[in-house]
Each structure stands twice: as C-alpha cells, then as structure tokens.
Image (cartoon, rainbow, N blue to C red):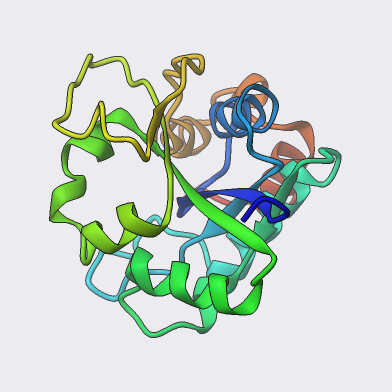
Length: 195
C-alpha cells in the first residue's frame, strides 16, 4: 500500500455541481494525504423521483467542466455501468479491481457518518478503506468519530445546496457566484433547470 496512489471518492448526483463541492474536494486534495479526489457521479436511482434530475451524462459533463482546470480533481462515470441501485461497497470493489495500484477512500459529510452503520456492508468498507469526513453546520457526533479509519477533516462548512441553485435558476435569479463559470455557462446555454 505504500506505493499506492491515494484517491478520495466524492459520491453524489451533483445536480448541479457547485462551488461548495469544489471547495470541499479541493480542500481534501490539498490538506490531507490524498493524492487526488475523484467525483463519482451517481446515476439516477430508479426508486427516486427523477423530476428535477438532469440526465446522467449531462451531470457528468457539468462535473467535467467544473474540474478540468484542477490538477488533483477528476470525474468518473464508473457507476453508470454497475447494477442499480448502486451500493458504495460494490463500487469500491469494482474500482479496487480495476485500479490495483490505487487505494480508495470515501469523502463524506458528518451527517452521513452518523448513519454509516446502516450502509450495506459498512464493516467491510471500514475494514478496507478510510473515511475522510467534513463538517456540516449541524454539529453531529457519531460512534465512529474516533475509529482508526475515520479522519475528521476541518474543511470549510459550505451552506450551498444544489436544490437551492435549481430553484433559483427556475426563478431567474443570478446564481453565477455559486457555480464554476464553465458550469454556469453550460447550464445557461442548455437551459437546464429553467422549467
């Protein structure tokens, strides 16, 4: 494991990706021992409402445009080809087999850590992978806070949400300051979230 590249996986629908996502990912890439952060764009969950969710490849394109100028940030569509619904454990197994020279860790908010014991095969995830946890505004604590595989990272607390941005675009508000410029330009050009 000493020579393996350390990759932090940041899962989400990124509908759309915004500067809050980038601030957290960039912080993880610069202020932890992670070599790179990969945005894992999650496909549409068939059990969830798709009303406000852009097409999988449209969201992938937005993330690609957001990270293309960052040396340590990447995007992957690995879950697009996996069975649905996608479970994190399956994605981790698949990535570890595909990239044996990489060691994968998870990046998540503190709110996710409190429910982590409900995840499928969470013990196996903790046994084989580290968790990098960023704070949320609601000060949550978890029984896993002091686990040897859990790294609590003092990343900036971001109060921006994708749902806020979608609603603001629909209401014709100016949200350019909350989005990477290339993301805003593409959303505007494609008329995403306007209806």
